[in-house]
Length: 332
Ligand code: NAD
Image 1 (cartoon, rainbow, N blue to C red):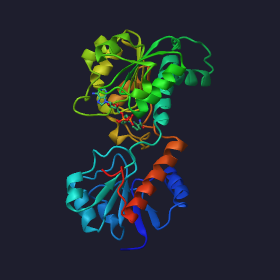
Image 2: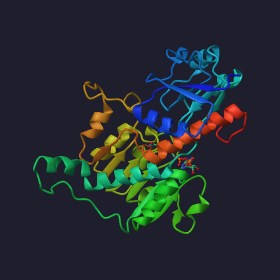
Image 3: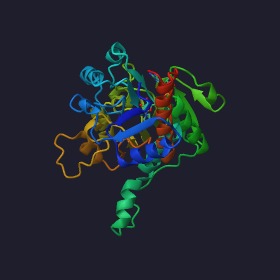
Image 4: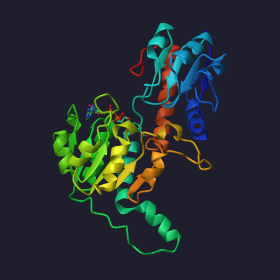
């Protein structure tokens, strides 16, 4: 075996290179080359001469890609993210390719962004910013409500949902939650309720459960109808938790005081790309953005210095465990 593990990093932006180069100084025997191309069947052959590849959420690591990687001698796929629904694990196993990931990096990064979206949508900060730039100092259209003493409903109380519960408590909110498991860390200040009660009682609803068959389109016209009028809905989890057409119908029904989305169903072609020169035909994103009470960001919840450093550290530790032949809880 080569004494140095050579890794080809796909889909890299300048900030990925910066965080990985900094973390690399504390690891030995690892060599990295970066490419802007994302990993898919057309680009997998670039891995010729490498021992491992590192990929991200939008990479296509299906059967064909894994087969090409195997032909090129790849023995390790490092996912620098938590999700791995884009990896054909069975084929990887067949070729004895180890797949590792970063299960959690900074739950507070995502939770803080969820609260930022809730506050921005509530006080229309996206509108206020533009108004003041145009010397329009009027307050019309900017009225919000106090979060203090209101009810926050958190759906999914794992790592990120728990961080969001603590933030909401800090705002002086009553915190209720729905999850299939109760998180013992939240005992004493979070009350677990049924989904129906959460929907009907919450002033701010924030989604933090994973996307699975059971949560697909969890927010649809039926669940929207059960919500309080004037509710704020925030989704920083996965786009398909919310049925976009139904959300638009709900916004038109004046159900929402505000909607904050870091993820949405149509995001795949947009995420981390500059498409400002394009005419986006049939875009539901554009329809959503036409509403004054909707605030959208492009999957940036994870994007803090602390989270990127943690992703780099864990990914390189995974590579180090592979070199040493150590088992890891980050194996998929
Ligand atoms: P986690 O696994 O720690 O927590 C998920 C929680 O959801 C668990 O407590 C689980 O019991 C619960 N859950 C499962 N099924 C449920 C259901 N049907 N109803 C209600 N709750 C249910 O995950 P996490 O680290 O807190 O991440 C949560 C989600 O955040 C991820 O699935 C991911 O989609 C998203 N995420 C987004 C970003 C971003 O940049 N916007 C970054 C990281 C993660």
